[in-house]
Image (tube, rainbow, N blue to C red; front, side, top):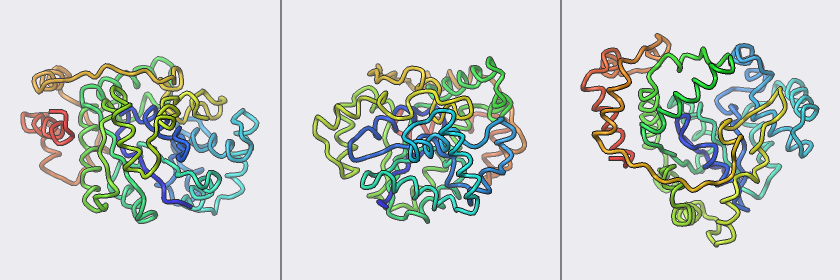
Length: 325
């Protein structure tokens, strides 16, 4: 198979719409969120306790991707057969399954965009060890926009009584999760060849696609002609830009699935004063022990406990590193 492309970002960073846009290029193909490569094998994936917690058979995006490969459709029967196929192949490694899916679309280059890949540096290092020649796109979004969107997402989950409403992230400050995941990605960048790592703003793609997408295509080594760009601006044509059956409903952001057509956005620019005021107005964050245990930096942990001036400066500094200040 051809080395894949990995899109790295925290949740709520326009990853569903941006990956779908990129995946509509004739030489590329984007999967929904597979939640796969940080698992060891299919048996590990199916036995994961989160499947029980969230009342699902397997990740929605993975079931839909397998159904699409096997039957070119994603109805309830096709997704059920996809789950049975997984159950009968539990010894297959996650890498073997990913390559099985990618080979179905050869010679197109496949894109994987599951946000949990960025939860720890070890997960990203695993991707790099599997595919040392892969390309990595670091997708960014302003801390204000990302935090507001994440808060809105979990409030929506609560209104529909989703089990995910009790996820630990709901209890934590959204801006700090944004900070921690971008910190992981920037640390990971140091081990990837510079020519294979690109940071791009989601706001830039969505507000000025005719300028940014040709640049992205040239970096990826695919055609940047106007016909290809026209196709990329049809994310609604993605085979995953609609709701799936009850057993595998999403795989992409529900907000994107509800209205997947491309809409050029008016880019919002937040001054340092705006960002500071937004962060301060959201009050002191609450933390779960499990979240703090994932951080290995004692100084950062102390700042997180107090949300003091120093922690605020860390988030502001990350905004500057990502080009938002």
